[in-house]
Length: 103
Image 1 (spheres, one colour):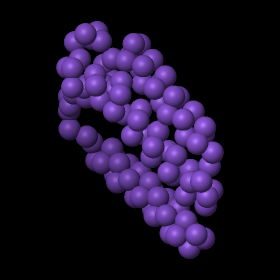
Image 2: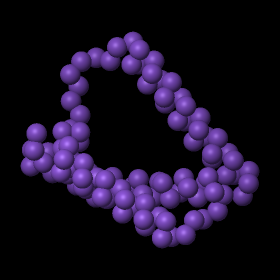
Image 3: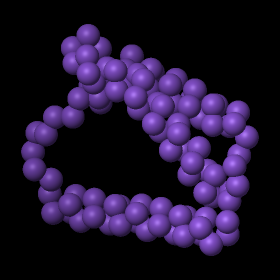
Image 4: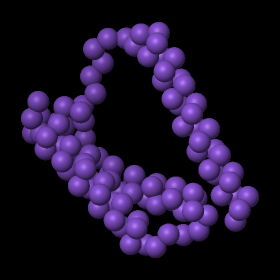
């Protein structure tokens, strides 16, 4: 698959929407972990890093941007997905509660 084969809406999201939203989310998450606002340059640096990573992904691995379901997930993959989501959500809740308590 080439980059030109990707739909335009997906290209916009991959090259502009994804880096900006993940940069903002990473800056806010870092503020929650540190219980204070980090310097704005750190947020800008993280966003630039997401732009670079997204651009490199679109150049070298454009097939990762288009998800195609080839087969149904196995039982172990479903269990692993549930465990992973549970751990990620619990970590986010823990950091959010810690932030709200310490502020």
